[in-house]
Length: 453
Image (spheres, rainbow, N blue to C red):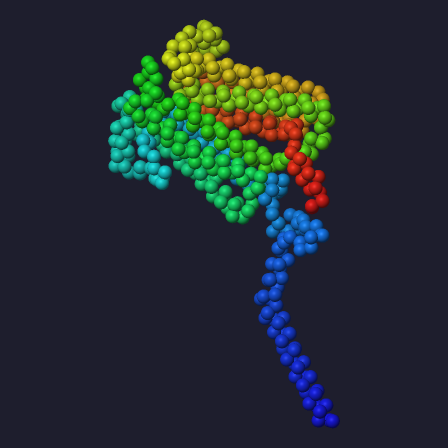
C-alpha cells in the first residue's frame, strides 16, 4: 500500500511539473507571438453581427482609428484633403495668371515642340542656338526677324514656366490622390468629382497644345481679316481659358464642401426662420444666374484678348464718341462678328461686365434687407461683401486697363481679379446652401448622427 501511494504521488508530481512547464512555455513563447496579435486583430474587425435579431455595431471615429472616416461629414478627417484641394486650386489660379502673362508678352509660340516627357530647358549657348533656329522655321518669326537670341530667351522662359507649372499641378494633384485612395481616405460622395478633376487636368494639357498649334500653322482662321499678325485662334484660346476656370471652380467647390459639409447647412437651415429661408433661396437662385453671366463675361474677355480688342476704343463709357460703334456686322457669316470683329467683341464684353456687376449689386441689395441680413450666418455676409467688392474692383480694373491701352501689369491684375471674383462668387453660393432643399438621406443621417457618436 505504501509503495502504491508513493508511485501515485510521484506520477502526480511529474504531471504537475509537465503541466507547469507547458503553461510556462505557452505564456512565454506562444501567447505573445501568436495569441495576442490574433486576438487583437480579431477585436478590430468590424464584422457584421451573426445574430440577426441584434443590431449591427456602430463604430465611432472617436474610439476607433480603424473605422471608416471616408465620409463627407467628417470634417476633421477631411482637413488634409481640403488643404490639398485648396493648394491645387491656388496653383491653378497661378497657372491662369502666368498664362495671361505668357499671352501678353507674346511668348506662347516660343516653344514650337511639345514633349510631355521632357523637362530641361536649353542650358548652353549651342542649345539656345538650336532652339532659336527651330523657332525661325515658324510663321511668328517672320514678324520678328530682328529678334536676337537674348530676346528669344525672354519669351521662351515665360512659355517654359507656364508648361512646367502645368506639369507641377499634375503631380501635386495625382500623387496625393493616389495616396488618399490607397489609404481609403477619400469621401465616397466625391469619388466622381475627383475623377472629373483628373479628366479636366488631362484634357487641359491637350487643349493647350491644340491652341498653340493654331498659331504655328501657315493657314488658319487665326489670321483675321485685315490683320497680318500671327496669333493663336481666339476660339481655342477661349476654350483653354474656359477649361482652366472650370477646373478652378470645381476645385474650389470641392474644398468648400469638405470644410462645410451638408450637415452644417442643415443645422443653419433649422435656425433660420422659414419666411427668411424662402427669401434667401430666391437670392441664391438669382446669384446662380449672376454666376452664369460671370462665366460668359470671362469667356468674352478671352475673345477680347485673342483679337487684341482692348487696343481699340480706349475710352469709357463711350466707344470713340459713340455709344454703339459702327461696323458691328461686317464679317460673313454674321456669327463671326461676335468672336472676331473688334467693335462688337469689345461692346459685348462691356455689356456683359456691367450687367454682371448690376447682378451682384441686386443680390447684395436683396440680402441687406432686414430681417434677412441679421439672420444670415457671418460667413454668408463676409462672402457677399467680398463678392460685391471683387465685382466692383474687377470692373474698375477693366476700365483702367482699357483707357491706358492695356499695360501688361494692369492686364495681368485684371485676369487675377477674375480669379478672385470667381472664388468669392462660389464661396457666396456655398454659404447659402442652407436655403436649398436637402436630400432626405442627408436629413436622416443628420438625425441619426448623435446616436452613432
